[in-house]
Image 1 (spheres, rainbow, N blue to C red):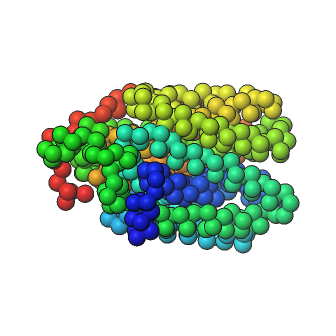
Image 2: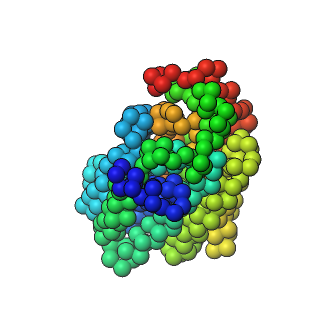
Image 3: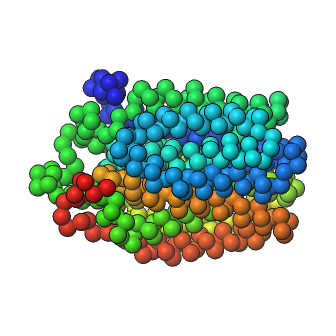
Length: 429
């Protein structure tokens, strides 16, 4: 904290932007265990080791299931001890797990190593980075979370590309080592040195304001309209929290079930290895380009409308993928899916923070994140299983489109809950 305190007082601009990009470095490197990165390894692993696509994708599912079990504890740790220690520890474990995959030639060792990395991807890095950014920004939260999403999207572009190039010129074992070392070098220094938990910790106010967002509310001890005060227990008694959580889970079924298998699917459609891999890059570039616009959208549209727009885009992309058998279609439909994924990374974190405030945000995110992890676990296996049974992904894509429509219907009822009638009991977490 000492380095952050000194810099916060000397930085000529709002120090929250430094915190944002420091947390963003962890979001960038989490792509070492991203489903798009694993997609690059599916073909060489299946060819060299003789593993089925369901077996390979199952490692992501295993990690997702572990993340589902650990997320509540991770959220509590963030509220209790801070995001910095959780993020730093997680980045170190992610790098170690990724490097060890170079020697994972048996299914058990592959599951242990990739599952560990995937758990880090799905739980502590996802929760920790978004929570600390949401605590530094209120009025500008949408654009801040959009920029955080951009850092993840940039990693989605580079990590699969670096893995593909390394595999092409060396082998897949070298690719795992390169990705693991990158995680350590890029993220550990900024996370350890520059993150402060809240602006108040270093004598600042959210968004760089010179006074509280709602001074009248602050003087009266009541929660402000822009920063409501909810404990985790109060939030869990609202239907809105669970509608959001289930909606996120359903959309992550689509996310994982598509991403992990997309390169192999394009290869099955008769597209070459280069085209298939570059379509993934197009999707990631689209996601990166859409991240900041999604931040603008979520600051201006009601949360429900932004969420429903995300679900509609994911459903549309799922239907479009069924007929993707040319280079132009693969690129265009991947771009649509990238736009949808940018919304998926931006809208839910803003929704949780705007609806329930900063007080217990780590714990609240911790109890809802298992829905996301479980969705990722289910999606990865469902696509692989459908392919293994039918020798096609068509039924998987139709299923995903249906889930997108169902999510839109559920989120229509996720109205912003009325704030607690009395100030929250700070002991009730």
